[in-house]
Length: 309
Image 1 (spheres, rainbow, N blue to C red):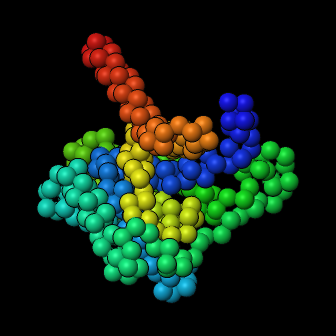
Image 2: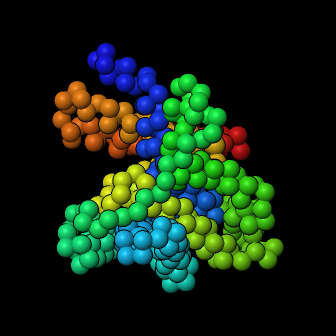
């Protein structure tokens, strides 16, 4: 137990938390923005899979990481558009539509992986480009802090900066004001001339954008290949993290950091020779427990509010 505790208290563990947090933070931001508009996007699992797969394939054939990034983002935004089309235009239930997209993405990526790489498991035979690691000037020289904060993949820093972007988008722009207005009271928003459907669609497109970055990080930053269903529930964890964070920038960051911490702990428990099923289960059990406490808290708030009326 001593070596395990030393490992958890080491700078490497802090580094691991930020690294593991990245593919959770991106989709959590996406879910939060769509939720603020009243159209929660739970198709993040499928969005991340499609973008992760697209990035690897495009980078392999073009040998251009910028084209891979662009292609992955376009696919993610398209997933948001398709979800919006089914929900807003065809009046389909957004939850059922999202589930359908998740199932489609899982099957489609496996099928295409087999066609291109002749493998239903991973794309290791296809040499993928990866986003570079960035060593921060000055910060990297600071003991402990430099070891934790410097040397991460480029997209990790983009994810952290995205929290600032989310804040300015939601609180400092006209679009952000309209997103919040539509989410809080769509009828009132429509009465003052806001196109509710358009704002909801914009929120889903932005959501797809961030989901795409999360998927691209998984296949071109976290590792350098695409694997079957490699999102491993991160899209659903993002929904939990967004709710726990109240769909607000700081809350979203803290909740994503929390789930990154839990995932890191589950990895560091591996040397204890615990059953792998147990360590893999820890993040998901934690998600259920966290959502349970969140639901209890929200129920109490609602009861307290009704008692004052």
